[in-house]
Length: 225
Ligand code: HEM
Ligand code: HEM
Image 1 (cartoon, rainbow, N blue to C red):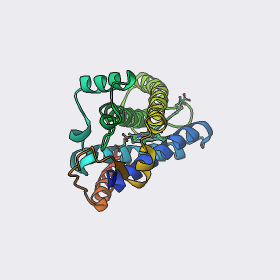
Image 2 (cartoon, rainbow, N blue to C red; image 1 turned 45 degrees about the horizontal axis):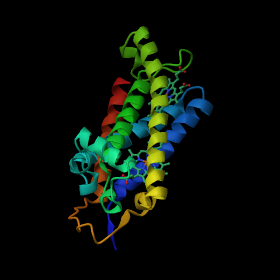
Image 3 (cartoon, rainbow, N blue to C red; image 1 turned 90 degrees about the horizontal axis):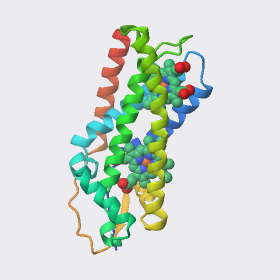
Image 4 (cartoon, rainbow, N blue to C red; image 1 turned 135 degrees about the vertical axis):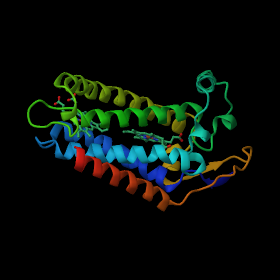
């Protein structure tokens, strides 16, 4: 057995911040202020964070890169089939980063989150709050987009439930310590797995990405929102 670092700080920090912000998005829509201030700023923060993680998929550390975890859809399906029929041995079941199905789930979660945030910016509650860019489109469009904003949240919850169930399955049944890995960044691998060559990018690079996207978004919001 050997313990190696697999997740960089930005992957871990962005994951747990996204979890908190999704919870806070729901809380703020249910119990927030009438002007939607908390809900809007929460949504902008989610947008900036998820956007930054999407960029990190091109320039970040090895395990954060799309090319290391986005496999052909049929590979993801056969991975799931082998897992469910018990065909996968524990050795094969252990991945350094995301497994083929987990990679697609991550991508879907990010895309739904980004779309949720963008639709929110065009949505309206028809009483007090209008999304900052809703003035650019017709009121019929605003109504449709607001309906999408509502419906998409249900899809997000469904995906999150599936995601957490999958993580718990690996954690409890397969005895892979995925949750600890998302917290500490480290995984213990059996010697049967070849030592991977992983490159880690510095955290400040991620901070530069977050700051650049944040500043650009702020500029657009201030001048065009
Ligand atoms: C709002 C709720 C959640 C969302 C939107 C979410 C989203 C995600 C995303 C997008 C990833 C990929 C991370 C990356 O590559 O940067 C991920 C991975 C992960 N999440 Fe979550 N997550 C949520 C809740 C949770 C919870 C409650 C747990 C703990 C039970 C959890 C445990 C994990 C673990 C262990 C991984 C790594 C999986 C692997 O090794 O492939 N997540 N999550
Ligand atoms: C990913 C980020 C976001 C999430 C997860 C989210 C989630 C939600 C949820 C759960 C609701 C309540 C839906 C219902 O009652 O069925 C809601 C409503 C709403 N959200 Fe968001 N939201 C996000 C971002 C935003 C942003 C950035 C804005 C605007 C700046 C926004 C504007 C609104 C408005 C105006 C409503 C009320 C619509 C109505 O009353 O019909 N949201 N959002």
